[in-house]
Length: 338
Image (cartoon, rainbow, N blue to C red):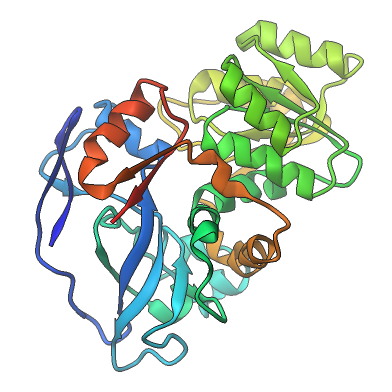
């Protein structure tokens, strides 16, 4: 088959790769209905995360089960499934506490920008729908695989409650779906930090009540103005830079919560500053598998439409253009059709 490889900064190639096969008895092979480019894929694409050898790409996926290993019991060929970017057995002590993305058997998926994909730990990683969904729901179901699940975890980790004031730092796909998640969790006021008009528009569609265009200290000051000098109850950090993390912590009221899901690059926290910030800080790789059944149901019931974050759809063989468009901020998120 043909699949996506990265060779170095801005060097994405769609080339021949071996067809995936069952390696372990707990594996499944799925034929993808859709995949996409993630914001985190841009770190190696931009050379910020080093690539030492040609590497497969892609970790968001949904599709139809083609084949299963001998020990797979719950997933059947022919089922439509959605899986997390992190595999999990869903039975270890860590999984039972809801942190499947740190499962003792975890593997990070990294070959999903292709027509077919091997999924380890299929029983614990994949969630099947009762029927094959209509084509128009595929983008939203794909979003549950990572970007919505990650935005949901940001809101959950930030302890968003009904009536709360929430701030979302970052206007990428995760941040935008953090807005949607905060809305679903009942936040009364949702302040999205964004300078991009098209992203501001989508943030408002997802539930943002206010837009703040400033960054850094100016952004923090504006948040304080909007919250009577107190700060927000809940802040979702969806970028992963030093500036975004400090901005998130500084925008939170004393005793408030920061949920951070941006993959950190160059983030260092000052212990004394954190001590006196007096905030709850929680985050990490989103335990998407914990939320998948609920999120899939919300999509199938027509309650949410997270697929709106895909503002560019390309055939899979044009994946390099999908990366370029996101890198140049011509697209929020690129959907790829095998």
